[in-house]
Length: 156
Image 1 (cartoon, helix red, strand yellow):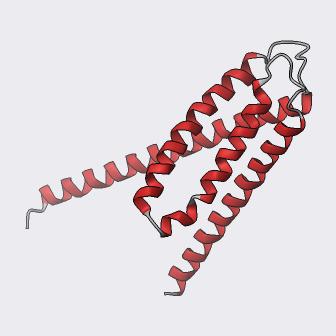
Image 2: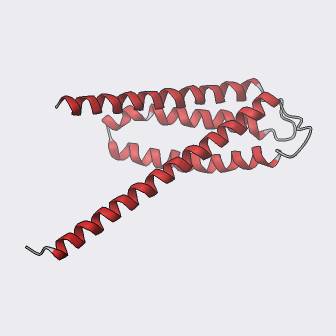
Image 3: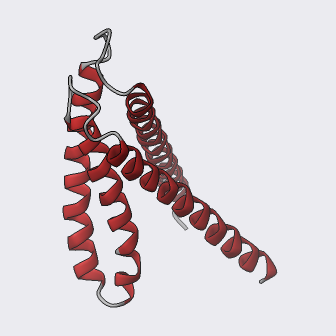
């Protein structure tokens, strides 16, 4: 029992750290986007990308307590927010990476580098999630296969 409590405590602690990290990143996105809203003449959508993406991330965290009231409604809203967030992520990637080679960028360097870094961080995060999902899927498949073979060899 003590081991289960420790695992539960570790899971809650890691979730809290994750929420705090994403919340801090989201607030930083909103602040930097708002501070430099008019300082990217070559691609004026980059500060707007930061503001909207940060706001959508924060909105996602606000939805967490809604699960206690209605899971179906929460899943529907999360699906819509997730789809919008994915599309906005792609749009932000196009806006930020399209001016990467342009020199001088005529864009606030601090804000541009932050947006660039956020996108790279999100790409790495997505890649890690995909790797975990693929690894777990393979492990589950191999486990099911070995159990099926064991059952076929020992039909007791």
